[in-house]
Amino acid sequence: MSATNPKNRNRETTPWFSLLLGVALLAFIAQFLGFWSQLEQPLGNSLYSAANLLLNSEFIKPEEMNLRTGFIIIGQILGYIAFYGILLRLGWVLLGDNLRAAHVKWRYSDHIIVCSLNGQGQAFISNLRNSDRKQQIVVLLDHIESEQENWCQQQGVMLLYGDATCANDLRAAAATSAKAVIACGASTDINLQIAKAAQEVMEERPANTPALDLYLAVSDSMLTDGLGNENYRHFLQPSERLNPCAYNADTLLARWYFNQYPPHTWADQHGQQQVHLVFAGFSPLVEALICQYAKISPYKDFAPPVFTLLGEGAEQQRQLLVARYPVFANGRTGAEQVIGGLYALECNTIFKLDETKLAQVAALTGANVPVTAVLCCGSDDEANFRRAMSLHQQTLLFNCWQVPFYVRLGQSEGIHALLDSANKDTTTPLIPFGMAEQIFDLARLAQMERNARAVHEAYRQSMLQADPGTAMSADSMKPWEQLAETYRAANRRSGDHLPVKLASIGIPFKPGKPLVLDASIRLDEPAERRELLSRLEHRSWRHERLVNGWRYGETRNNPERLHPSIVLWEDLSESERKKDLNQIESVRKVLASDNKISI
Image (tube, rainbow, N blue to C red; front, side, top):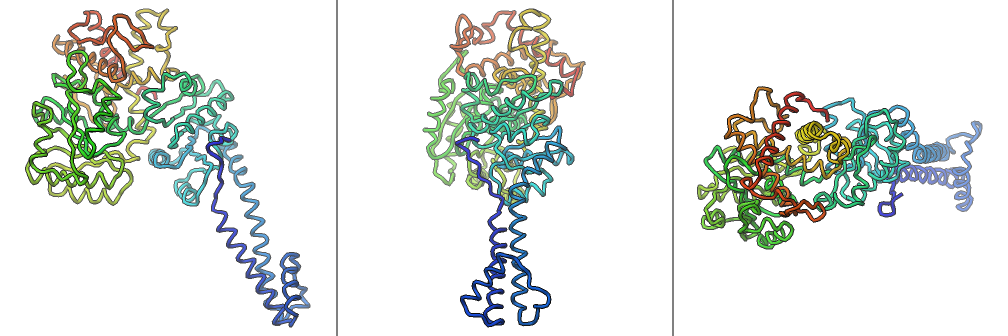
């Protein structure tokens, strides 16, 4: 049992025991009154007789029953109810979980184990239930409240008491025969301990069964900086029995958002040649959104995107971002440029900007880049709603920023209703996003991974053809199920950018739907298309490297994060340019040959 997460079993037994003890007290009072007032015993004898009768549980003989002993008989019955009720409740508390665990181990297989009932856990379960009512689900908790027990009953899932960081408790949840484990708690350390316990249990998993999928919620710093650390790699090492998938909630939401609401598409349709996103309020999600779009922004001949932070303390937030990501500093050019600029504008807490302030947002860029979208991404739903309403009203008043407003909301159904009301008489809607049920869905996660898997499979096939000996021994050439998280992350960037590249050459896609490519689509003709795709892929790759702390170096050095290809596309050799296009063509073939890439 983890010392940092002690078991605290609370099945709301206290109300049950309180009720039963109350019944016992009534029994004692009734018997006392019977002995004292009806049988006219002295006070001391009455107390002794009532306690003795209650504890010894001896019924009055039939021949002794009469109207005078009515209180004693009532007390006797209540006493029996209390006595046996307490025994039954104690038996259920002591044996109930063991019976549930035995039932799970005997009857459950290909089930899904969820190790938290926070917002993420409940969203995962609700989406699973909506897609498949028959899917067996086990919730494993070391602290159980009555509300959680009632919710699980409503959802038709099995609730077990146990510590998911303990291998024995995972065994009790039949992890050896499960299909997936979702470690979605708020603590990265606890989730990593669950991964460690899962590794131990998976040694007992039959070799001929599919690998257990382990979905692991991790902090942003661990996801971006720690995946190369040996200690973390130990917990996240894929094998034939375990397939770990680490995710960060904010990064996941950022990937989903830009797939669902691509800002370059809106900008292109409205005559803009550069994307300008304004962030009202600050949170880790803002950082994730900026980093994600910086990597996948290359689109047609658009200039690099511009970001503006809006709010109290905006300049301080900008400086913190630049300190963490030096490539976001303004003034960078050439091969070191990733974004067009990161700016900050201070405003009051109510976000009520006058016409001058609204115009100043575009003027900050130095080129009056018009706003493409406004994202209210603070950590508090109500604050996001207030900011969105205030800014939206000002833009309508001064007839500027006729752009969509995106409001991050969690579970606030009341605010959703207010948004619907506010959108009735406007052409620039307030669009809610970021609800847990939108993001934490195994089917949607698999769909988001689909393009990344296609990218990896295409690269793997091309390398196996070019140099089979080297490819077979390389860690980066392993099948997706055995691929380390570091390589998966690189493939995700390319997979997320694939719809952007295709949109650049006029191949549309439906947001939120699988990307389906027809076998007749040509990416290598005409020459202008071939060159554009090669440029875009290289820019996106270069942006990702720079955001992740890589620099140019004449010789590649992974520990020092140096790479000779971190240069402009024009400075690449012809062979390097062809690699980019060949990779895109290989991905197209994979998607065209198998539009249902197994997940």
